Length: 166
Image 1 (cartoon, rainbow, N blue to C red):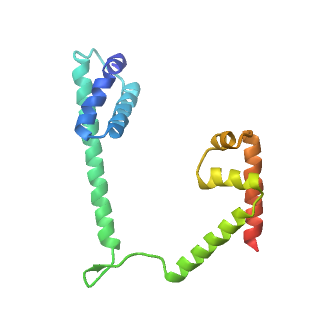
Image 2 (cartoon, rainbow, N blue to C red):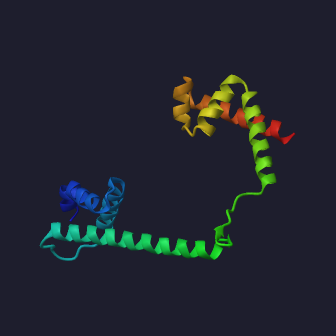
């Protein structure tokens, strides 16, 4: 069965992509089908492996659609139960104004503290923590080793923690 899957993988992908209108979702479903085939016990001979593969793919798609529908109903029900409206108007669950001011002040203090870090620590911290780059990507961008990036980030976090504690 697995060899039949590998032969028809691209066709199965297109089959699912046409129905989902999403290559990403189709890729996920094909991966699920592969996992299912790897873990399934096949008893006896399969007379038409292609037909079985397409049926399994269609069933996975149906299961996914049903799962999403259940999640949407559950989320809708939760929203109705937790949603607040006043005079027919939605009441937004925004944080209180004082909380917003405190948060903005914390961001301002952090921004200042980061700006005061030594240049290499600042660059490593910004690339890794603020831009979300990996340590390897940060090391490449800075032209240093990953170990050096780790040291810069650790030093930056210590400096920031010490400064923001006071």
